[in-house]
View 1 (tube, rainbow, N blue to C red):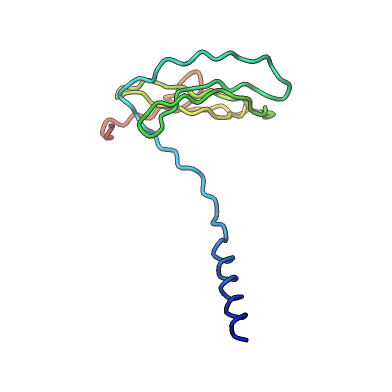
View 2: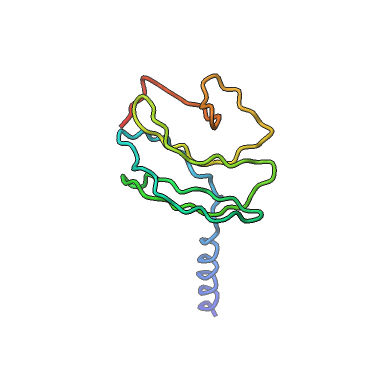
Length: 130
């Protein structure tokens, strides 16, 4: 009689251990690289599709290597505009500004911004760059 109860207790422990933990948003790490990314690959832009927008490809930096991230379709979002990812050269090197959705009604009022994307450029002369 004790055997079925102990097996049931072990099975119950296994299923309670599988409980999912709360999802945390990915951490954004700003890395400044000394070497410029390779020139962008030429992608053929497909014909427009209703309700979708084309996100162009870009060189991403993964594990110490530049890796081409091909373009693709994404659902259009009402009241928002997609700002493409791009590499920007700063005083200490190159920094990737990832693509993002921006509300059309919201205007950024930062004093030091990039005029095309309203991205705040942060420069800290005391920071350590690799």
